[in-house]
Image (cartoon, rainbow, N blue to C red; front, side, top):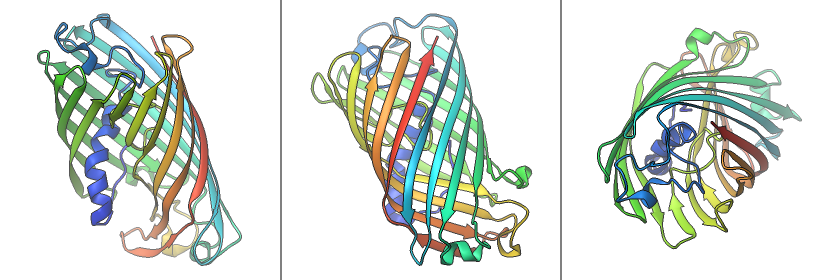
Length: 337
């Protein structure tokens, strides 16, 4: 899922590296791979042009989900908050030829926030800045393996993010990606693409991005296109170490930016406005493949650089507050058939 962004220069530099990996990773169960998948494209260089010699023609489908709990943390100028994020998604793919595949993805996310102990940020919003945020994304994708080295990828999606009583017609944004990658060897694949992401104010943000998948040693990989399809806010950058074909450990970080429409009730100053949460999570991840078609992921980490923001319906800022680093734990699963 993409969300409108308004980062400073430093945040933008991080986003340039990470953003495209987000959309590719969101399709991982449909058209590409998750970490530990032996059909990883760089390892099949020199084989048939598909890069996926074991991928059958016709339909495939996938389901993925999970839950992340971010523990309570203090907000500057008083108060605190915690959040539970629940994810569920479904993917349907069709492979026309060994080189050409399309995909359809429907995913949801429910973020349940709990603001406590008042404080300046909550006071502006009459006590509760926001509570539950529902998010829905519907997207399509196409992947074409041109030859043994070159492949191209494109996708587009419609996204909604809002509180339950918000005006959902004003909570929609769109995004699209076009990207290409080149496999230099069994150990290195690099790519470049452009993300176009709509903002809730109607403007469009264009972000160039770099893709990397570099196998340093037999078990060690640096990548920004692998990871759980369930964890949709961004793919991020990870260093992976595979113990064997079924178990992988990783450490990673990324930039997250969530933006959503607020309820049409409550204090007039933020009625129908926009809420924002920004953070830089760092995590450790364990991936286990108990059977070839299933992946389980356990995560633990800390979310740094937490910032909360409230805007009026016209887009002008009401207030923003930083929050202390917040630990989190998560579990995700993915099934593909």
